[in-house]
Image (tube, rainbow over all chains, first blue to last red; front, side, top):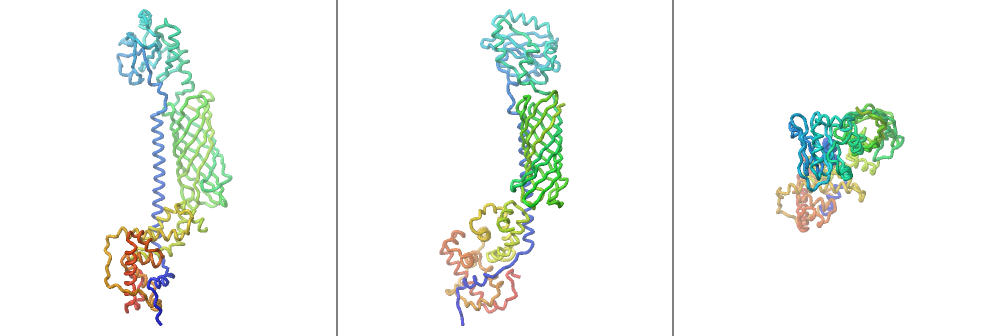
Length: 384
Length: 186
């Protein structure tokens, strides 16, 4: 007997039990694609990190936050120009020449010849910048010149002095070196108002010290520094709760001062990290090589700073549940940190900093963890 | 590892979990691919695309509805995407349309599964998709019209033509003797 049925329903019924399996090649292709994607993702992260670090580094090199008082002096009244190196002054000191009243020329015999330009508006004083191998940048002050007589006195007194004499006096105590001195316009202005008869004089060493004290009191000329560190490391994971994961480690940092506030530093750290997540424990020994930029926006005795950069981790040993296990022998981390340094004496500084390292790759791809290291580093820095 | 843990691990791009998920669901999804594609090779390509898509987008699965259903929808959509890319391929027009598309179910029982599958695969792509969507996966003509960018009436017409072709092929005397042929076209 025929039992007619719609062909669609009949096929549906028939195919309900149909099952077939793909070739193994399919998974091989999928796996290869997944690995490729992971590699690409890693490279993207790595280059992003590198790019950010480079950007960070370039920003600090250009030092956009540096105090512009150092380089732009308004209402400059007196400038020493060295006839033999006329361009040096401008080039080295980057001084604004607006409102210049008096120009002191240094002739070929190295004697100062002062000349005056009339100044009708300005009460402010003066800065003299002289860039020369023998003459450091100096600051001179002058009061508002209302009569010519006092100026002539000054001229005559200056005429007998060579630039070397002037600057030797000023630089004797080694308070100013290699950089333009911060100029305190308002302070000078007060001085000139209180002593109207004083027209032009060299600022004494003490006065320069006083003027520059605030901004330079902790300024060090040392470019290099070395910092042995004791490190308290917390090896955590974003995805899982971990416990018993604080270890003590050590390391050393070599730092180079790139600009007044910026330091480039490299180092080496020996890390023994532990992590206990649920039913398994991870123990990892790494050699860490950080490459970081340190930025200290202030120059105070107690000085906060920021750090940022990358670390390369070289695996020494890895065990998971006491079994040797590691899929990756190297990894990288993106680092950021916050610290504070305190000048102890001379070239010795006490440093405390907290660092956060986000590791790009875990120790094993079988564990679903995104590890990070949070550490507190304590060290004594020696600058030389 | 249960399904929930597996999904969680896959969301973290854990390769082991991804492999496990593939092993569990590969046969079901491959069988589905075979129905929607023209041959085994195309079905395997589709399966590969499906799993890569699943692993890349598994974070978008929020646990609403069954995970199997979610994967199945992706599989079907991938096959439809392929059809849309190759839409310029001409549809074979069969003018010998049968009015009656019923078939003796006992006669159908004697036909090997692979043969039935092969004839589904040989349907013109649009007919095949409409037939699969409507008959095997319970989509409505309205849903099909949206998925394939055709009208509901076109969908109905395509379904009827697909059934007519299948009936014609299955009633051919030589058909039932081709038991050794596989759905792979080998």
